[in-house]
Length: 236
Image (cartoon, helix red, strand yellow):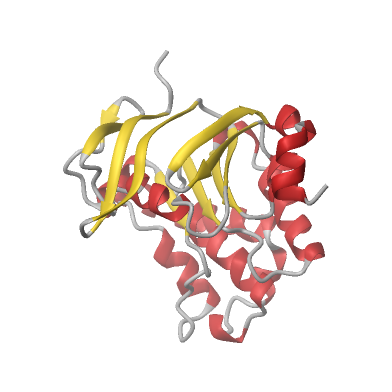
């Protein structure tokens, strides 16, 4: 059976500057996979390619057997790809409920909006308590929950999460990771994260991205015990 996401030998440019070289990656249905690397490694650029925001100049990305070549970002959302962007990017002047409803973009999910909204509020009860507040009045952790909830409103097959822990207190980060773990195998998760230890504990497999190139990959448990990884990323 074909992988849910199959990225094959892509080169990616921003304007005329190459940012990714010969990147390949696969995700099977229900997996939790992390992409690790320092600032500027190309992690967010990779997610931009998977969401069809930037087209690779070489190579191919296939999702659920369908090529993303020539596709626009909204079409990728309709296919079942949802992004939680770095920095959350909630609509601060809109209410929490309005932000969530904005996530139910595909026509195929609009008929189940109420059901999906209730599910998201069960995952993040604080959003139900704050549903009529402007999103800009939420704390950073609550805004991250809202950004994840908004992405889940499209009922995605693949959830991309860019820098989940950025700017959040450790206890809030752990709580959000527990919630994502509770989603089960119905949603495949690709996580981009600088907090290496947290990401490896959450994921089943991981890829190491350095200066636009994949340099390592393997089972997360093995990478967590790897002496080179512990020195380079965990300060041990």
